[in-house]
Length: 177
Image (cartoon, rainbow, N blue to C red):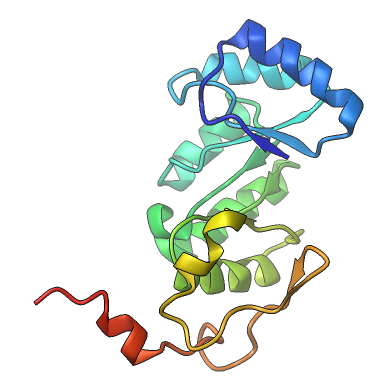
């Protein structure tokens, strides 16, 4: 998987997706600007790679638009932006019904990672979560313990609620007087 960060124009994105295809990448993430939904549709139709995007979206209607009109192969709702579990569940169900993949995007805290893991475990066809590996320790810094990562997999926390415990001392470092 490669995240382009919305930096390419259509023609370049299509050329690069064809070049990257020989490396058997799972997806090309956010190659085009967020305003270019028609470019995404054209890219999804022509690219040999799956195209993932829409982490910036916030409603079931906008995600549905990205899947139908934009042709996205993979949508990436972020529970902190899309309205939490209720909207996340609706988005995941819509993706499932439309034959698309839903891979939640968890880019901020260990709390969000835990919530997103719970969502992935409960959604139809759920098996992937998008996190930013280099930033995991910073995001986990309010948790009493981290997640059990091994061989690219993580165990879904099994305790009460989200399955995690907050370390009050670590949390106090983030309080503003």
